[in-house]
Length: 252
Image (cartoon, rainbow, N blue to C red; front, side):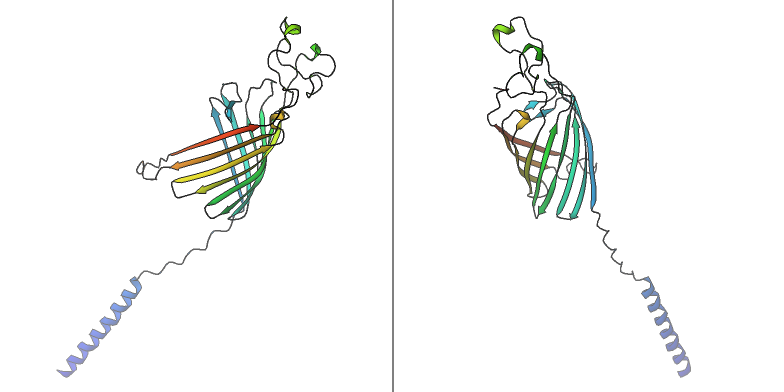
């Protein structure tokens, strides 16, 4: 009887050890955290648009006709909070001087401090292909302040000599540049507000300084608004005002 009891105890001990080993093998192994992805300093943004009217600060640039636009912007991130960038964009326009298009060249830097995303840079507006018309109707160099021979775009009526300069008057070149400073504030996942300031010493080559300031707001709908469809929605708006100095004698 004693011998049988010893064998039973030995079998029980063996089963216990085997079960323990099996349980240990079935226990989930703690996953090793993957290393963070390497920092990629380069980034690119690009896009295009089809507009029924190209409005720039409340004024049509396409004569209330459709316009197409495209842009390309390489970016270089010095770190997660500081980005350098340059860009080029193009829009179709319809100007009195028959400029072929608007070509934008710009660049700057974007620092981020907590909820504040800043943007500082310079923007150049180029309007190649501007033309002059009817310069033979004026003696000398044309209207003061204009390019030589560049005075009028349009046909001169018979009553021109009696009534003065009629029609659309425009310089050959409307190109100009302006510096800008912006800040966008992320209040939460749904709300963003911003303040923008632009300044040019010679707005649209009018001979007058130009200052534009605006405030912006954006509301982004929660991701659950349209269920699991993957469709998102946001509403944004801008309210701004343009100030202009005194133009040169050509535009007076």
